Length: 273
Ligand SMILES: [Zn+2]
Image (cartoon, rainbow, N blue to C red; front, top):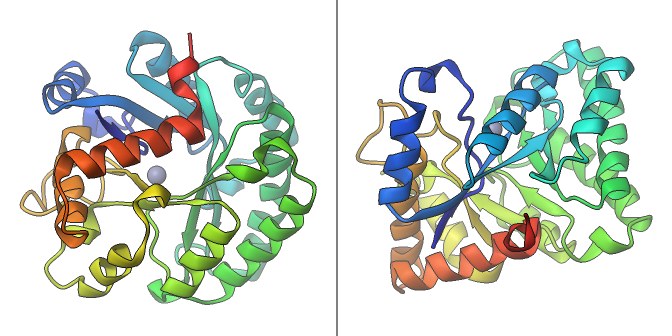
């Protein structure tokens, strides 16, 4: 009952063997995969994959580093896609001050995030958040800005308030994690939790309650140990699950069951057609 709640299966890295990749995932016990878009084109591709494969679900939206492509016309198309029964979230959306350092483009990220959040509340689907600080710091302006925006958004939420979304591939400190969880967000854990030098991430994960964790590969990126350097794929959720189990001194089954239940609760995909 494993789930991979974040994988970019439409990217070129999977063009030659997507069927095999899905079969590997199935063999590894991955029941469901969530493919988030990064712009209009990849949002379409995510939906197309979800239409083709039972186990795949989609999210739609503009990634913060892709905002130069954003227009209200194209966003109308995102809004239409968001109504699709296999679209279970809006994302990935958020703020990235690592790849985007120009003040104007950071402002555009914040501005264009707002209609995505409004869309999420309108269609009652949670958000998948991307957050990256300048210089990969654990905390800084991007975190401050994102929490400001989310707090304003949460004031107006009704149905989504109890499960507004997930901080994908969480890389912040424990204070930020606590703040996110107090707003009912889930925390997405990816391959870096397996990296040798990443004791701080393991320490953080050890302090997170299992009922707030989602497991994601972020395929084809962030490949866990011992496959670092190779393409990542959803079957590798097993390695992330095992590391979380080790840190929590429990079994793979316990972590898998808890995180699958979290994903069901957030994305409501057990009741999907
Ligand atoms: Zn992603």
